[in-house]
Length: 370
Image (tube, rainbow, N blue to C red; front, side, top):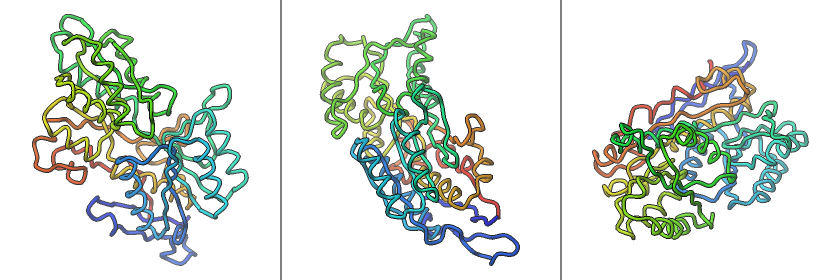
């Protein structure tokens, strides 16, 4: 079987990664099975800093492998997401990385697409497969990629609990305002599962749950919603704010600064603007995240291996789950305000200077045998 060489791409040198391969004994040495292929990243949600990082990483990795790559954002439209996938299939794309498809339609829709275009390869991100009865399904040849969402949520709750050791000692719950939107995208639902464990055992109490009313303007919409809710509580009633998504968190932070409040907050995901706000030394105490400058590389590796038929290499990765199969998760890491403030001019490009080593670890990714 022909094999793509292992990709060891650093952020600084990503465009210089090797894209050679070896082949069966009777094949010409150096034949790259994905050379000249065309791939696309298709994102259901609107563009945001973290998804731009994903796109850049995906594109650079694809180009290093000799492929052509495009990105399409679908502005939170189910129909646009579906139509874009169908259009790319019709236009002869060889591989698609599709992101954030709805749990109520993704499995049936993508199954139909692949029946019509059997040579197309698809990998998914934050897209759960269930049938009309809610049963978990898989699609032959399609690898599902996720962050470790439950762990992201739990790590943030632990950060909050650490702020209130006296409450833990007295067996009193920490009072949290939760920024969460259930039944919107599967990633938020998976994060809710991690958060809810702490509610169940009584270590936290959710005072209110709020969400944005405008997905195309999440920061300003959340700023207004947070300001209204926070204003209903007296000083000291809200111990902390837990945010399921960093775009929402930026709105919450702006509301807190506008109100002159010192309530601490934590969030999932990270980008340059988040880091800048954390570095102000105010409310924003921690982010639980994966490395969005690497996530696109990870997804492109998986898609390229699918296109090359190298599923054994995918299954050999440390982040692969045999149950339910064709399922991989990106490990999480916490970035604290103290870490961000310990360096000068920290951005996602040099965050590794102050973050845990796990932030830049690639060992979870699939490698390819020579």
